[in-house]
Image 1 (cartoon, rainbow, N blue to C red):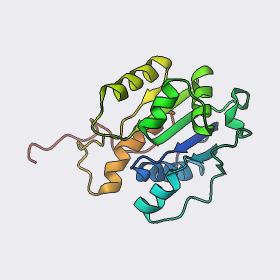
Image 2: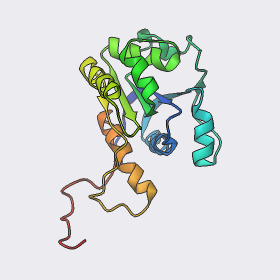
Image 3: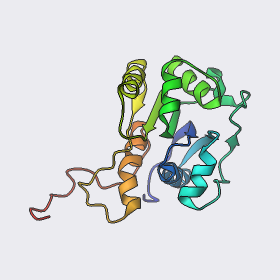
Image 4: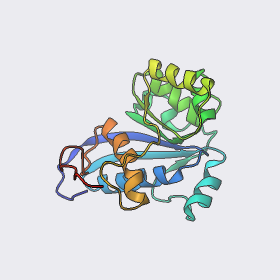
Length: 200
């Protein structure tokens, strides 16, 4: 990401992190958002599920981020618990299948599912990054229901066409797709910019 990016209007985004494996996707997303705050005004709020902090610390071996406001899971006074706060987007990354199921059936039993319900009812952008394998029919039915309700699904399925050199570059193939859905400016090697080699 370059420092020569133009300035854009403010965006208000909530990031929810669940206890599914894949905390690195959320960590990389926050890395990008930190850089974007240098060239545009971003209001970013975080909420962790009950198990997410344990998974975060186990997988990443680092403490929770301290440079974004973190709201408690049962804090229904959080601004993004209401459509009147006019948050433009919500990203749930990684998103457990339990969370998927509750959102798909309209169960708002904590701040994550309530905020997701707000995004759907207000017709704002809800981006879900599910991380599970294999999937059974119930998972697939819930995912289809959410797409029909207006959510965007970005499964944690990394791409390999840009020949990632390490795990960070591999993770970025997913995270950049998420940022693209929010129409945030990201400098990144994209398909077609370089001709693939004939040899592997």
